[in-house]
Length: 282
Image (cartoon, rainbow, N blue to C red; front, side):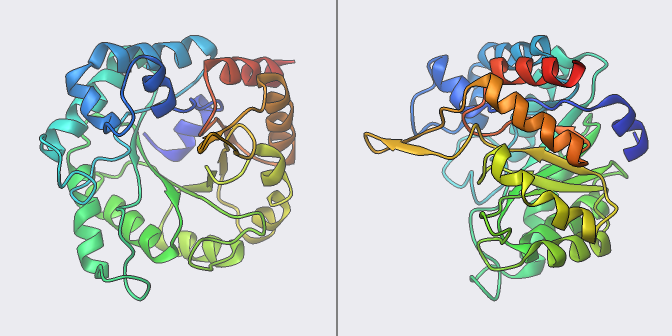
């Protein structure tokens, strides 16, 4: 599938997975990826709820499938990725399924001890295992060098699938390691990403103020998958309490501002995606 074909089919992405699985009984501290094998029915039920809500594409539950994240896990990366894609495809049918790739959990040089080539190899493992995906989504990136390593691995080992890279920014439009939106856009165009955008970190209202900067520095399609507002700490736990209607209204503003693909991250649910679909079809 090409990025052009993907954009012709996909406008609404899905929402959060981990919090939904916790509602289905997954204990805190358990890796959600393991439930692809241990409780596939629960994973499929979450996928099905997002599909019923109006999502045009499902993210496979493969977010933590890399060797560093799984160093204490009991399942091989290939088995976890294969199960994640099988579950998503079982629900999605002919709709697109994304292989979901997350940060490695360790900073690469010069901010950490992980070498760049080692990072590429770590990203390559789940990407090579991702047979059957329609695209590769690299998300929640907080370091530009790591994002470049992930996109390079996706380009080299992803079989020509579209590569979408999504960043977690602060309210000023900067990554944890300091890069700003102009630098992100330039680096991702050079690396060969097919679309870029944001997820996690911020709510839709905060992302709206960053849209003009993105549009001024790239012609790549933009995807926005924000949290359900900014977190509120209650009893030591981050809570996201933006109601679906307000979320959907803010997301409609992102669409009007130029975003091409829209969905939800932390705190979102099928109710948020359903409200989003309604807002986009009014």
